Length: 386
Ligand SMILES: Cc1cc2nc3c(=O)[nH]c(=O)nc-3n(C[C@H](O)[C@H](O)[C@H](O)COP(=O)(O)OP(=O)(O)OC[C@H]3O[C@@H](n4cnc5c(N)ncnc54)[C@H](O)[C@@H]3O)c2cc1C
Image (cartoon, rainbow, N blue to C red; front, side, top):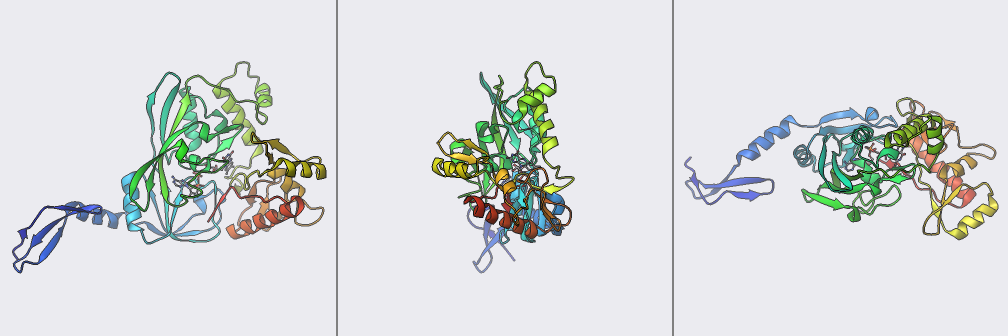
């Protein structure tokens, strides 16, 4: 068949295509070379099927992904999204804030975009970009080793950099938003990269637009943090000062604060490698000053902290401890099958072995109801439920 090149190569979607006409003057479009390469790559990269997800989440509950793959850069992500466009999608980071209550009948993609880059600096700050798949604690240690200050109070939080703005992670008086500069994310539907500045992210307490109005719409590719050249220490929160004293620290440094935080966290929080958990299961709820006064009258030991806007943040852990499945029984240390509440931290729900995600979820429902019954306060889950 004789083909005559006809017209210019046109860009169509991801690819270009070259029009030809055959002897009958009918149009034939030849696939562009990049399309052929793309199709071969798609065949080679086809995600694995029926993959057990328990090893990929800190709860360690059983769940199977119909399709699973990792991606190491934007191009791999784009190709995988193209491949799996008709399937429901779940992006995995370190899996430390996820409860899988069922199998995932779709595509699970684990973000493994790595790399730490010093973008630029000014008199006071350095701007550091981390790939979304960088392990959070390793990233914190990297920054500490270069004397870039700000992240020390956030030491030893499990998970990856990519989820840090999504969750607006926080600990010991510091929240991520204070150190966040911007991030790049892949818009799944529009197939393009978008930059989010701080004001675009709608940060709140363990919250951002990525958990709210943009839920499931973006894949975070990298995050840029603005870290201080001269440290500003935050030691008044929790037991940091006591720990520094115990450690015999004479001169304060970001490394000393990080060590203190690591020591406190290691003694207080259950290690997910030993007992499956996702840290605090619920957020600390805020109530109006009037509601706080009423509760305090009724429960003189109520643990609460004033917010700057005049409302009060209630300690969810304390309320859970004071409630229980039956009169005289506390949730703290409670266990039903292999699902339970940790014996030292009522706020932390745990998988003692072979608990199902649905059993842990049901326990969280029972806790929500009993706290509501006793205090008239609605708890909200911090953990992402699938
Ligand atoms: C023992 C323990 C202690 C903890 N202590 C704290 C604490 O002190 N403070 C605190 O804030 N948190 C704490 N956490 C919770 C958890 O560590 C953080 O929320 C962390 O940021 C989760 O990161 P991850 O990579 O594991 O996210 P995942 O669990 O993998 O994902 C969480 C959510 O983000 C989505 N997601 C992940 N990566 C991306 C991406 N690149 N793009 C788009 N969506 C994405 C997922 O789909 C999911 O919905 C603790 C958890 C544990 C187990």
